[in-house]
Figure (cartoon, rainbow, N blue to C red):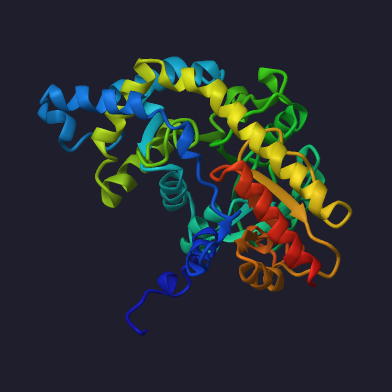
Length: 401
C-alpha cells in the first residue's frame, strides 16, 4: 500500500500474540504460550474494596485526566518503598508511570533510537522489545549468554564490529532477573562487569525487570536479584518495573527510572502518545500499596508459581527425559527447552496444534535468524492438570517427528 510509511511497512507482529491467535482456532487447546499471571492469585476482595472506596469518595480527580508523568502519590510510594527495597535512589523527576512496560520500551525507543542505530540484545531476548525497537527502525546485534548471563567477550566483539561498520551502538537491553524467555538469572559478578563495560564504552543499559519479585526458594539472598541500577553511579542505567506480575496485569501500570534528561524526553513522547496513563488505575495501585496488599500476597504468589514450575519439570522428566534439555528457572513464568536434534520449532508448532497444545517458537526471541531448536513454555496461567496434560501432548508432537 503506497500510503504507508517505510516504518509501517516493516512493522513486526508479536510472536506471542500470533501464537494466541493461531491457538484460539483450536478447540480444547492447552496454551503453554501465553505468559499470563494466574487469576487465582489476584487479590479480588482487596481490589473490590479499594475500587469501591475510591468511587464512594466521588472525587472528580479520580476519573479525570492525570499528569503525564504519573500520579504523584504513587511515584512517591515507589521511591520510598519499592525502589528503596531494591537499593535504587531516585527523585520524582527521574520517574515516569507508563501504560505497561511495553509502552516504556516504545517510549524509550522513540527517545533514544535513530533509524539504523544498533541495539545490543541478549540471545535470546524478549520478543516485545524486538518488536518495539524494530518498529522504530533500529537494528540489532545479538550477543550469546552463558549460565551467568550475557557473554562479555562476545559483547566486546559485537561493539567492535558495530564501530568498524561505521554505525552507532545506542544501548544494551537486558532482563537480568528470570529472563523472558530463557528464565536465566544473571549473576551478581556479571551485572557489575556489564555496568563497567557500559561505562568503558559510554553505552546506556536498559534494564527490564518485570519478574524480579517473582523469585523462588532457589534464590537465597537479596543480592541475587539486586538491580544493575542499584550500582549505577553515573546515570547509565534505565530501569523498568511493572505491577503486572505482582498485582494484576489488567490495570496496565508500570514505571521507569531514567537519567533526568531522558525522563523528561520520555514525558514529552508520552504526551503525544496517550496524554497520560489511566489515573483511576494508578489510584487503585496506590491503594493496594498503601494497604500493604502487594507485600501481603507476594509469598503466596511466589509459592504458587514455584509449584507450577515443579509440576512442569516433573511432566517433562516423565514424558521427554533425554529428549529435551532445560535449565531450571529460579523465578519468573517460563521454562526454556532445547528441542531434540533435527526438530524445527516451526514444524513442531504445526504438529503441536494438531495435538491441541501451543507454545512460543524459540526463534521468535532471536534477532539473528537462529533459535529454531528451542521453545518457550509458560507454566504461569494454567492449572497443574493442564500443565501435565499440555506437556504430554507436546511430547506426542515431538515424538511424532
